[in-house]
Amino acid sequence: MNRVGHGQPDVADLPVSTPTASDTTRRGNLSLVLSLVHHKRAISRAELTRVTGLNRSTIGTLVSHLVELGLVNEGRASGNSQIGRPSPTVTPNRSLAALAINPEVDAVTVGLVGLGGEVIRKIRFATLQSPTPIEVANISAAILEGMKVELESGYRIVGVGVGVPGLTRVEDGVVSYAPHLGWRDAPVAQLIAEATGYSVTAANDASLGAIAELQFGGGQGCQDLVYLNGGPSGIGGGVAGGGALRTGRNGYAGELGHTLVRTDGAECHCGGSGCLETEVSLARLQELVGLAGADIDEVARALRASDPTVVMPEIRRQLDYLAITLRNAVNAFNPERIILGGFLATLYSMDPDYLVSQVRARALHGPGEVVEISEAQLESNILMIGAAELAFSRLLADPLIPLP
Image 1: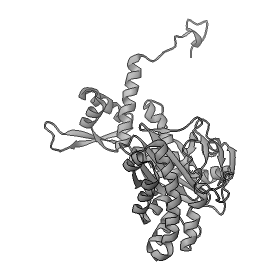
Image 2: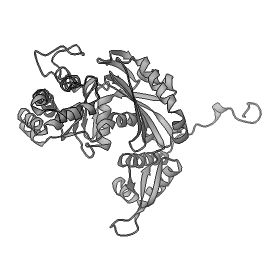
Image 3: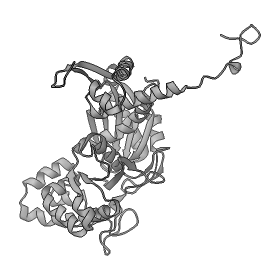
């Protein structure tokens, strides 16, 4: 212990260490390599060298450092047709994990997601009514308490990401408005952090779904993308331009569920009327197949097994309104691809050619002819993977930060 007056300098008098340019470069390179391994899930040293433009020796040093930090694993060299020595394969250490939480009007889902975007476990706790923010925090804490032995014995948890079906500020995790949940100015990230003891970040669920599809699903390699997700709590969206998510001034961008599709339409939760959400909804599909409260996968199976003459008129009615929103998105953003998730993917799968034809007929010729429409590849795991990306983001930006 240093004491003033005993020949030792006071702590306040010690020089402050500042990062050097080489330190900053090294951290940046470690971040680049770890992010590539995380998003590719498996990548050879040779591919890392090619993609990053760094030399083979530097990549070897960076990978070795990440192995020492326990962030990645290096496997046996894969034999391929390349000339020269086979290149070792680098994979994420799946014992490094994030927790993902998704509150909905009828449930709270908690997921365990390993580095590399693998959903290891997912637990859905059904609720009889829309949970309050405090109830979400308490339910999440109870689920995690039940997983305590598994988490402590097998994983290092980097934090918690929360995907909320509503307008959510990423900087402080406050949900300014979630109409279906009935939340206003709810400090959900703070409440969950206090209940669980973990570091928590929150954002809009559909925006997180867009990130997940960009990084791990059907949006890989796509620079301009529109993602729409339909769930029990309505329809949300995310828009990417130049390979990055458009967040808007407060992180509220992408609320395509509140596109006006019917001038004489019903009143919406948002206070407007004739929104997409009022005409295209999971509740209507549940009623169509007589499965009130059923999850999306169950409704999808029932629709496919139903008499087409019974279900297709409603399917096409909803697709017509969905086409109006997609037409507006195509004209406004000129996306390369539109990806549909949740029950919107189910609608599309029931008659894909019909939706494509309606969008092309309504959109401007140029952007309408080039856009592709597809289902989300990550299916029901998409929001878990997207929320986990929030928790992983700090580590990916700086792999040298202290971890549990």
